[in-house]
Image (cartoon, rainbow, N blue to C red; front, side, top):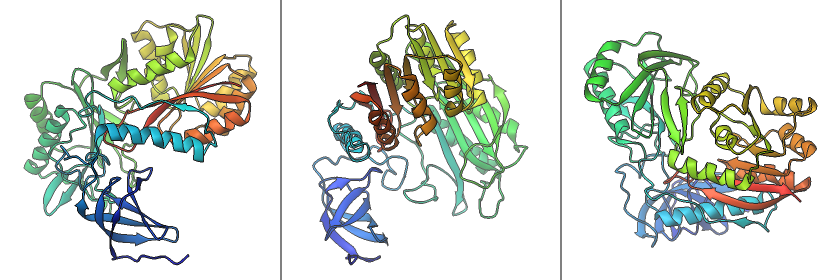
Length: 453
């Protein structure tokens, strides 16, 4: 097929759909252009910025006639910041699109069409929800800049506030920026490999208490005391300040070494009635309000009884495990990250829960090993990272034959692949519930109920 466009072309057309990444889709003689900034129904002028054999990339230059679903963004840099894709899309339409995304992944990737996908469970207020952010730090035009990366770039979109994080995060970033300017603290430059500050991590709990993590390329943070004084004198809700040392020249945000500079060792946060210790590098859902919605659905789907033994694989700091324990006989939580398992054990003590056993190791190794030792569960929860489950985990489920499997996914593409494997081996998808954990973005969480066919 002859490619009908070239870089530099300016086209006029209607955006007909959205990609998995939230980009608009414009068709030119059956050739697909993924368009940054386009929404379904927009009639726009689009500039072609890259062309490949099977698709092209473009960006909206001018909206001739806006989509009926387009709204004014409450973020003043949403047109350049890559953090959110849907600031200008009506929230109800975001929820509808996410439901359809999950449904289409199940059909196209999993070959599963006869399944009930419920309406996406959204938020009453879809702003200021994110309790964990990592903000890049840079230097542009001789000025310090803090903000998320621009769309499709490693240039920083300089921001004064971020409306999906709590306001204490905005104030913390402003103070750090002032400290850098006052004491001439240089941002780290990956090209020259010089500079000090790389990222700012900010974790907040339900009471808007904050943990700050300063990611540096050096061992000693200059003017450390001055920064601490500036922060605690202006923000009474700073609970702790950590330095993370990351000398690697990679895109990984945190290095292995954390050093406490001020305050408490950990933050305590809540999901429903349960308390959790949060360490600087703990995995904890970024949206505690929707986490309760998500976990309540997991409990509902499992239909727990007092004689049930449950495996919670990829358990993190034990959030789901502890949520299940009060209704089950026994819960085994498996997680590869040592620090997370230590936190999980502390969280069990914090909540006075004794019928959970947390095991450090790879799920694909620990799960089969436990089964061979005769430890069997009649129900399984899977909450893997974005890459999905390892095949050994799925094969062990097939061999163990639990009556219910509940799959919690932050990536419906890999979820559909994994679920298809279970379906091919005797299981059936009963119901799917999308949950909007990440409003204003193209990401969607979902819970899948799978039972023996």
